[in-house]
Length: 196
Length: 196
DNA sequence: AGAGTAACCGAACGATCGGTCGGGACAAGA
DNA sequence: TCTTGTCCCGACCGATCGTTCGGTTACTCT
Image (tube, rainbow over all chains, first blue to last red; front, side, top):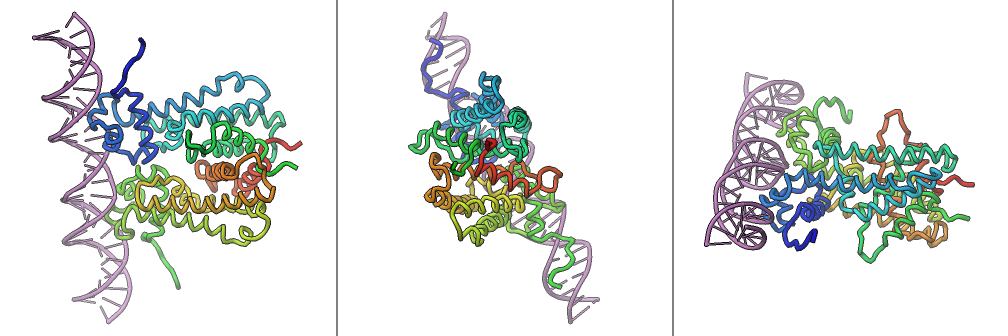
């Protein structure tokens, strides 16, 4: 077998615990003592699995960034009319956010105090820039309204999508992932007002 | 004269420095040493003006909350058709966010680690609830689309508006406050797609 | 049975945390 | 000149920070 039994921590399982605590208390507000209590092992034992607090952060934001950049490599994001690709990316962003919720949550909250955080911010800006180009293309095609500058529109749409991490909670009997993705796409492209 | 000369700190002027640092580094990531360097006075001197770190946070989020709740007391937010009141509140939220940007930024980032932070979160939820009721009324009037649940729509609209604190920078020769408010209202109510 | 190793622990490291303390500089009012 | 009060300081407090270290289990392989 490739993998079997696991009643002890691996870097991955430890990460899932750490990310949960990071999101609860904030990265800076979380001490290694907090992590050890949440994981049920001693503070020093954590260092048997990972190099330190910052490596946990790096692993988490890497996972989130991989998910987001992966969208841009998909076929529907690369070929076709720009406004259709924009709609596809919008929907897929919602799906990635909900699927990797705790990791993306952490990514969207880094401030830039450490080298790892600044690296994460830089990659985020790169992703945002790629989507902004898509919006620019759709505007050039005349498929999105011209009375809102494309950079401004991009930021506002990102704001709506990214806000998911502040309130979406999966598995709760509330709204499902599909319902959220539909709602976001509808609001972004058609708006709130009832069509006459 | 009521007030004159001020070449020394007051709780208010110290607050403006502190909030700027809080927003740069995060509240938990900011030490009193960081504040003293930014203010140009010693760490102990800060305690001559304010009771401590948490009081600075409390003053800041209070100012932000007062601005937001003030909107709901204005006439256009209290009388008229619900969808018109919703549009008014949307526009005024953008104006308050840009006018009190650093204070609202701090408010939107509190995590709930201290009593002050939990109080701020509770008041925020109260404000959100008030706006959600407005959205519910507009839906009951048949003025907003029925295929997106009103609670979900409220969260997404809040997400778009609140994202302002992540990128809007006043006085920079970029976008003006009026342009942002117009863009938000247009996107929220009419959507991104060009009307045929 | 013995060797090797993965997983874990308590104790302690130097650094930094938010906050306290006693006192100095200075201007205003007497 | 003497008091009073504002504004500020360096030195220091106990607590906690992220991290290290030496050592102890307990399981696997030979």
